[in-house]
Image (tube, rainbow, N blue to C red; front, top):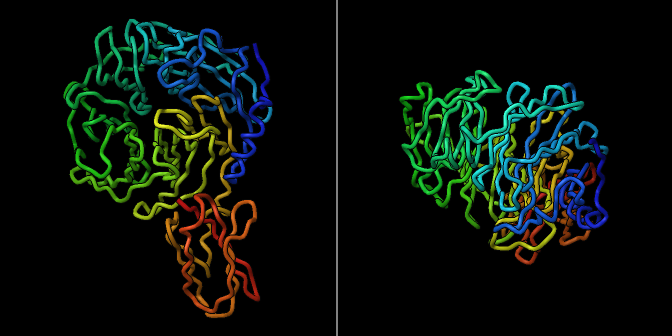
Length: 454
């Protein structure tokens, strides 16, 4: 059955309020009304209180699709026309228990691979998506190979799927390599247990970047699966906790998150695997309970699903000076010390639209940020540091008379003064945390920079 969804009335006001924090627009939000997910059997009463989990995206037959997992299974939406998104598939998992917290997805050669990590019948499912949006076909649905899996990643160049955690053939598993040479018939290649539990992995042409929970980051060459070689490790670093997930950029910058409240993301140079360098650390810092979850890098932008704080986007073109781009809070309730809010993000659709999953509030489709209006590198105006804590400096090139104004996103003016100084210091210790605009007016022009107070 194909069904259209619009914003639920109960969410319209909080989501409109949240959208004002960002120059990204909310194009679509799906939170099930009980017509797709059996809410009575899947009420979100598991240990983290979630109904929804991972998000993924893909393109097929000229259409853009979003995938979101729930306690019940896998749901696929055609989001080509976001405001009129339609659900084209809803597939029960091997277990549809409300206790299924984790699902994960990846696509390869016209197939969607889906796993889960609770119960003992979570099952690997392979879904033929080549005929979407018209039809789909579940071609593999078995726990004979993968009984449970916490995360999967597919090295497409080598047709190899990496399964992290859970169980393989009914036995506990740290990391397994599975051949997809025949995409409908996965075959176990080997298992890897050298570094203990592997929570997540990023792989590029057989080189794996392993997020090994309390055991840090390990870079391993799996070119010879039976004889993998550890190329480098990082086991002592700032804000070390539970190494959860990470992503590699095209210029050898690897960013990873430790899933601990208040722990910053690590921005690393891995061009020399024998000497991994932490170049900088970042976090939303809007609350002591802030916690980064999943990460994806697309070109120079770092996308972070940030639990209670929603989606955060950073510019890592200068990895030693990472700058805030924008954010969108998908979770309208108060922060806490558990795990709720934005679970995953997918920023690779050709339209530029961004997919976000929220554990309590479902699927979000957001327009891409207007980078020119957010990261304005003005010729005559610079503001630093950004983000700002207690004060920042406004730097201009001339000592002509100018008016400096600071206002929030609603236009409320917090500071104004006429000055001829080229460097001007502004105290923000009494500002509330949030987004502000610094504008400088002179006789010829108006220049503006967006800053965030944390």
